[in-house]
Amino acid sequence: MLTSLLAKDVQWISILDALIYAVIGFAVTFVGIFLLIFFVWLLGKGAKQASVLRERKKEKTVKELPAAETQEPAEEIGEEVRVAIIAAIAAYYAGEQSSCEFKVKRIKRI
Image (cartoon, rainbow, N blue to C red; front, side, top):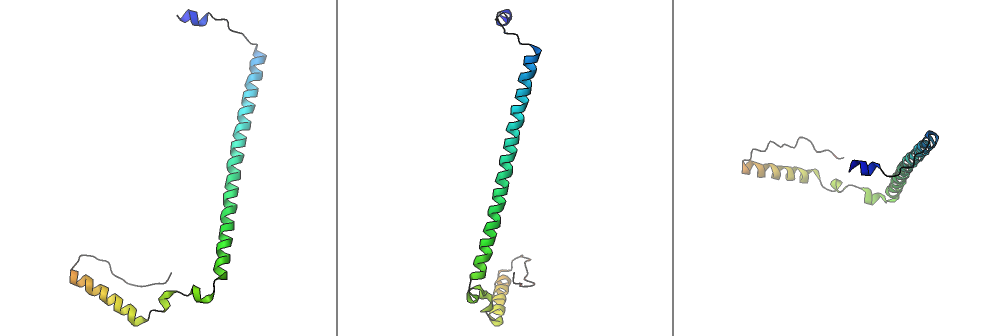
């Protein structure tokens, strides 16, 4: 069976032809890899440019907002109301007798 597979007529090529085919194969592979790298690089540049444009647009819309809309709603709540809320939460946890070790040490505006 093996001899029947090998008995077929095989066209022999010279060493020079084999060398030419190898060089052409290497060149095609190199060009293909180069094109893939260039395409990925180009997509990266496009994504970076899109993010920069998105940031500029975001900054522009923030600058265009009126001063009344940019105020935090936390400024409208007085200190007495904040203390009352914290006291109500503390009383709730004291009544529950939970083992929660969570304590509010500081409230900071971000």
